Image (spheres, rainbow, N blue to C red):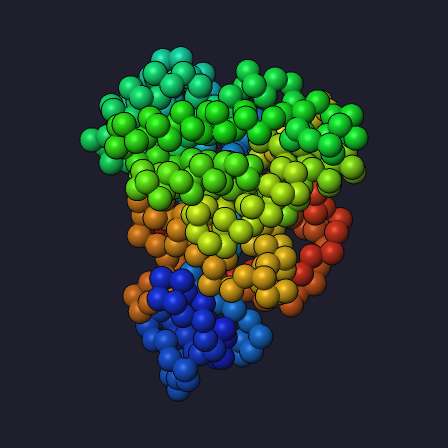
Length: 420
């Protein structure tokens, strides 16, 4: 038995409203005591944690991995290492692999990969439709029995009649369902949010209606079916308003935004950085501000990472032809802390809630917490300064807008358990 005493750390736990300096005693990683001050047991290793932070493990709603099919981008092992280095104790992976996770055999293959107790634990969404093509239902009962976390194509599902049938069919399963509201016909070939900035930059524009028309239809489908749904990748101010009204009408819907949509807007596309080629595209400044406020007030329940790895050759191309997405599991928490907590814009509890307890609730899981008997926490140094480079990132991929830039904050240790 190994005992460790973490002295005078800032302890943050949104499940209890805790944000205070105190001591944490663990035995083999399991919390056995929390108090303003504790006496060190005789054999305990004592860590001076002045200036450091301890909080529950983070939970990511949806990210993508290259394995199977594109192991040159990311393997399950390298993604796990990146998530662990970023403070994530749980990561839910989309079925957007090759082949798609749309049958029990393919899901079983993914589930064979097991992580250790001190690493991020992986969970797997199963596809709603065959090949995630939005045309015919996947083997939903078999996928449910095989251990799917929930159901999500990871792509827009535009046949609203099929959406209604899926919601009715899946209601007895009581599993999470995540849908991306996007009308690809309205979006056309747009790669920047419609407005004066897209016009100035000469980039094909994507109107906000590509999100709002589809989102309004989804909300109506949820209202009539009564089946709870998570709306992923909200990216516009008007989308926020639709979610706000749906919640006011007590429609069972939750929502998330990706971390990069909180940090950047269409003005940042002046760099034509391929790592900012996202889908949905970055919002205009007013969209970004609406998203930030919605996260703060709780209209948007959670921040998702949507980690999307690509190899160097794929992403080192002109902006207009680059594949969409960026990595983020290793960097997201550090940079969000620096952006919103260090400057006092949000309380620390708010960020932890949006990245830990709320995402786990959206996944129908018990949230991580700093309580006696729990084993899902991490130690964070908010002052550590370093520079993210391909050579020191755990991910195989390095398609990030923060590559080769100074970063403040470092996860010193993650403690996690396969049993939640």
